[in-house]
Image (cartoon, rainbow, N blue to C red; front, top):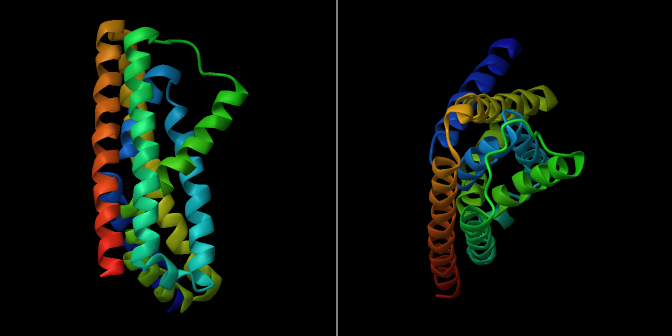
Length: 219
């Protein structure tokens, strides 16, 4: 029955998406640092940016972009550019921790800062070359499978995938936001430094991976 197929698509995409969300990465590091500064809503807003770029990716894959995403040259360029972007973000977090970090217990941020969070969710997602590889392999396979059920299948896949991200990152935001009143500025600055170093290291790793993809593409 079509309903059973849609339920399977939704459930499996949720589980697979959750397994990816649970892995430490740049979006998680940014979620932790922003939730400490801005409160609970930082997580869902970052996921909104993530959801926007993933919706565009699903639409593009449905129109046949899978082969392009699987190109080693494309993955290599994204790895290099994404790595530089993550390093830049990591340096910014460490500098903020050293010079001006203050735990903002009751400041959710302005509308402009929220829009920047959405943009950050987009940029952090596309800066990760393994995000590209996931969509070039698992994501492409899921889209092909889901298309057998038409738009309902694609919708079930996308909703299951995004809800797993929203659930996990919202949970992280709740833990960070509710505990921040018990966390002093020293601990907060330390968390920023750790997140910044994590982004810095991930950026370096992504750049090295990007070089590897380019070497393989040119071999």
